[in-house]
Length: 384
Image (cartoon, rainbow, N blue to C red; front, side):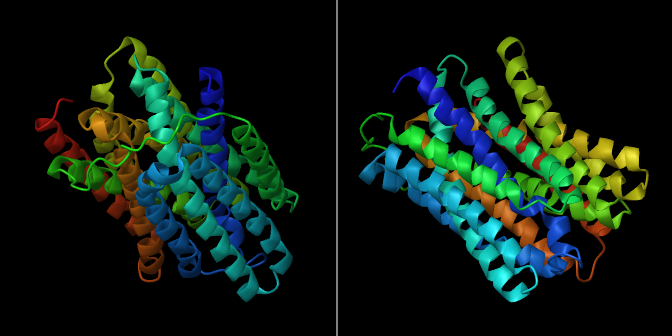
């Protein structure tokens, strides 16, 4: 496979995965709107349980499956699962008056979404790392910029389509693009399966530190990505402004990643990575105190910027530390991200019954501070 073909697979694959991944949480205002699906916050949180479980299992299984059947078949399975998830989401709107059937379709959709995400991103991370050997950080960050660009675009398009009551066309369009990517991947010739993809089952203590770090990050990202629009709506914003605020968060995340990717070519950006969590903690702590629309929308953008370097930089850092087991590292990082996201979407769903979203947002500020402390601890015992 030529480098330009590999680049298309990595970056277009990341973009479409981002679109698919955020579509379900981005529809939070629609799912919880009494005139639409009318799900409670608790029910909304539960729809992500299968996504989390299947993403963790598929990510952790991916290195073993690649060793047996090769990268191409694993990637095809992942992309096909994402397409099925989009089709099921599209079909759910036909059952909007039958909440039970709609909920089962959505549960099935998030199951396929988790399966596809775990397989696709676990494979794409090491592919991106090897794409530009002289600047692995920029390569991996570029992948997650593409992923973030998709996650930024979906809520914005939902905000536009929501006003015309036609949000269900978006998953249909995305599934069509995913099938196009599927056909492109089928036409490519991949290298033979790397039989050394799984070199050891023993996970060093330091690697567990990276797993914990990404889990804490996943809690923060999952909160903002799944409950950001719901929080803004509870603060008094309209559905359109709440969706726009979520789009701004993902836009900040996406463009922050490409910005730091470009900066890393010329400058040492490690200090940005280190201080971002503490600044994020301060921002999330003061955010519930405001009901100013402009401030809240600006804060969502800034939160995305502050979080943008954490996941790709951690993946690059961990991969360099354990370069002989890159696929296993990628699997653990993706599984940890989904585990953290799952904690936020499900745990916060239960807590939202007894506590306000403002209190929960300040709780996440504490998680961001813990993330900052853990980065300092791991940095003390690594080559970073």
